[in-house]
Length: 409
Image (cartoon, rainbow, N blue to C red; front, side):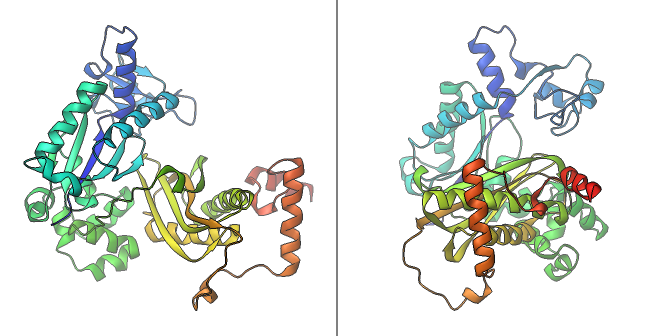
């Protein structure tokens, strides 16, 4: 039996959840029925549109654009600040509800997840019937709506859920790709960012079908490994494995929102180094080593992606975590500005557990020599005594601090 994968996505999550909460507290107006956005202070770093109502969309307001632009398009726009604590609670309750159908749930962001429906499909006449029950149950129970995409792998299910919104169910089975997906503009392909789209259009690739029928070697010549991935996506090739893990197995990780969007590896590498130091330190404190490392990217337009790899040998060495994260990043980075970066580790083992040596160990980043081991140990002891970050490499210091040091020299 072919896998049956659902992609479940909350419609305008931040705005919907804010509207539901306001109505519960006696509000007379539903934000989803008027021109409204969730955004921040126009003067702050977060002064962009995070979510919009259907009425706001009709004014041409787009997610990710500056709040000031949105008000120019619609002066009477209603705006409310985000409440991330409330969103996390709404998300938690939604995922708990979905797990009453099956434990095979992979949450990929606060407002979306994949569900492996294969094992429970025999409870309904068809996958669509099951999706209808789930979708309508969410609306009745929680007061907000979702889109559900259905296919045989995660990629196509994701693409299907992005078809017409809100409160809809769409299928995109492999035999439907040519009819439903190939006519779409190339910019609607999952992971086809602005810079990639510009390159593809110069190659006269304007639709997803154009890309699917292109020579993958030509695409890779211009977009490298990211181009190969896009070509595979255009042909419906994607993973079907829903990675559901119990909470206790999810491991240790950290992420950071950048003060300014980063657009070069020169800016990105020090961020991964700081994150790796933090994650490696927490692993050591817990007496653990990680067998799996994953890297997360959130772009300037709030789209997210992640990539992971199993290590040849479990490690908690920050240098190995950093180099692994950088390698993963380069494999999938679209070249567009990055807003958030993260490193997460999983498949944890006890630090004292015996290790099986691999012939591939020589390909791993080299262990530090005795001199550097003593230096790292001394730094760890000072940070434990005086607080995390008391002592750090100069390369990890913020640029302003580095410039001040150079001025003094």
